[in-house]
Length: 136
Image (cartoon, rainbow, N blue to C red):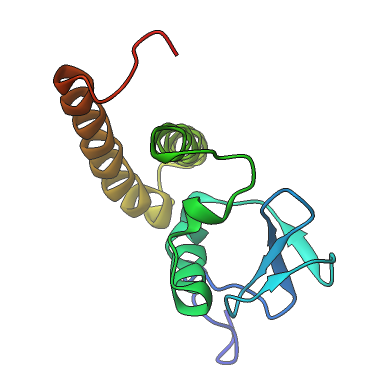
């Protein structure tokens, strides 16, 4: 690695990166919502989750999960968030399994697992209170 190259485990969004939200909307790395695909569309990755969440809060004042199209109410949002986190955990585990020396993938896994456990616990508590419909 030369002196001008950043360390390989530092993850950053590029200025032209945009995250597809559905419904013909994209989120920029600065947190703006675009109505046209004006940039390089990227997928949500375990290593970039916190960066996109920060961009969403900074630009809109809303959590990232609230910006995705097609979510109708709180239960949908929470279930979708859990699914998204589990997909990201699967991706991070695959990267770590393929390259156990990848320290960044290992560091990303623990907070993801903790968030997933917390989300599952919250959903089960609401289900027990009758706040969710188990048939849906």
